[in-house]
Amino acid sequence: MMKADQNLFDRAVDQMTLRWPDASEAVAAAAYLDDGSVLTGVALDNFNAAMNLCAETGPICEAYSQGRRIVASICVSREPGREGFTVLSPCGACQERLAIWGPTVEVGVSDPSSSSGWSSRPLLAVNPYYWAAAFAEDDVWPSAAQHGS
Image 1 (cartoon, rainbow, N blue to C red):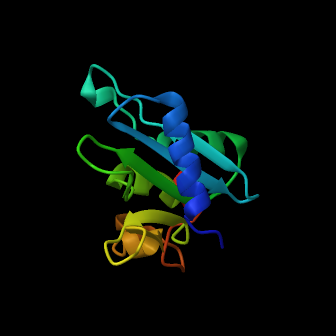
Image 2: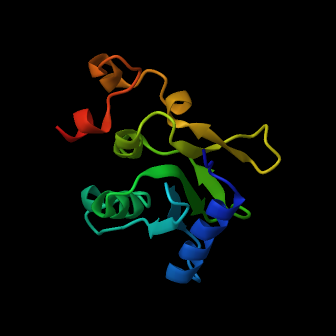
Image 3: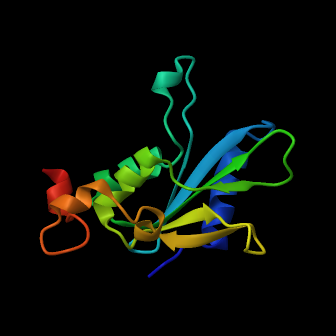
């Protein structure tokens, strides 16, 4: 199983730098697909904050459109007053979006005990009490078919 790793981190940073080379604040994401290819995306900021989209949304929608499976995802941010880049765990909405591919999807999470400041964890470890598990049929997580219904 592929994990959120340094390559995925670097691809997200490259996407962020490409889209916002001079911005002091930005967010980007990268995801491995089941065939090892990588999709990247950036956050969509809008004057109406309710219309903003997380950076993971683009790769998630693209993978779904292609009929591919996301196996690992990472989101990085650059913030004023902070050195380097910070890994952001997926928000609740992105956890829900990634859940379609099951509990083994690996995601980058902030981890102060790691030398890099982040590590990779399966979605089940990030969300051990996933609400839709109550509807799983003979498993700990609803199937992709159940998610699509």
